[in-house]
Length: 492
Image 1 (cartoon, rainbow, N blue to C red):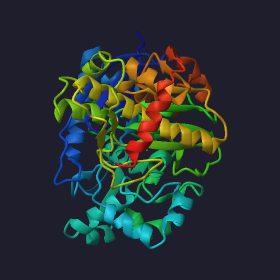
Image 2: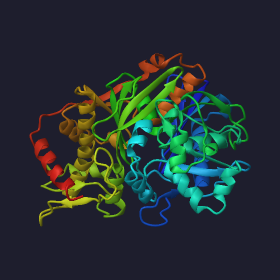
Image 3: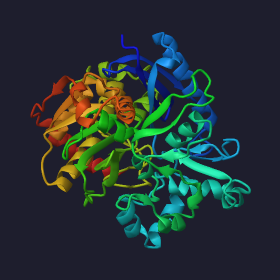
Image 4: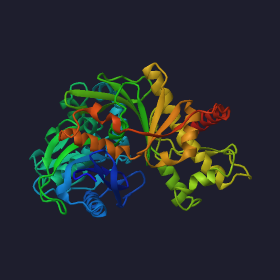
């Protein structure tokens, strides 16, 4: 076993995963620690930043113990994170002034609607590559300042700091010495000019976010600082890689050339296509986002998000209680040859790209007396795959060329039936790698580049290995599914 390891911290929506990865990029140990979800009222979603931090400490401590590795064997730390979730804290003591507002939260929808009605959509789109939506961080920061007593006055005095979760973790890991983010995370705030590569004074003023709250934007692979006073870790470990979870997965899949694409199936499903050194403006309501910055290389991507993917399976488990665990859905869905005419639109938190309908709600159609829970299970998998098919169709139209293959990762990528459905509905070969923890892998590679373990992106390319390919079967039922889907979308 190698004497040195890369520690990847994958801070996600429902928990924090720590992975210990050796210098050959083999995962040696993995530990996840969940934390509570907070729902103050319908449409509002929060996390306690202290619970996030504790889950980070717990997962890191446990993964070192599981592998029998000391903190002095960690070469560098890479961080990847749920992107648009944001928190505000006091600079003097690091104390959050409010719970973090999660990317799923819709509390600023009215503010976003007012911005659109006032005609600001074109400016935001041009500067950021984003649409005006409560999904993004900027209006969440403004809401926090408006609703926490004395917060705006504290901000005026320079006493507060804000950031997405990557920024918060680096602040904590460095003992409050480092307030940074990277371009991939900055590009998700609705405050960052992706062409000028800097915070936009105009957008900060428009969204009412003081610029003195915001972190420095550094590259995705460099030493930002070192550990200081972290329980369970020695001082002096470099924090050297950072990217938002979806960009990190794109990097971990080594989709570094224009036209390469990946889809991550997690709580939501996120499809990104690399577009190279120039941002591509979508004609189909996709997002233009920063992929990463490594050295002088600055890459962009097109992105589409399905807000509910794995969360739909969780709903079957926890809400409808028709399955006992998430893994059961594939076996149940395979007990029927098709969904029996049932169509499920998983718009349980609105519809993302390419539809962007905040008001959309989930729809289950085609029910008959003969419908069983197996039909609903299969329709749920089809609904996830159909949502992703809409995204890829839009991406191919934007790029002006068909996709050669789609690389997949995330927990639900282990579901063979879902992957085959995806290949058939896209009519594109779906490729699953040996390591589906590509979000964490991307952060580890970036950290390795940041400390010089890998000389370049190309030096890490040999680490990617295919596990299985799912070729389209030419199933004529795919066309029928797409037709039923389009009809059901009108009812969402």
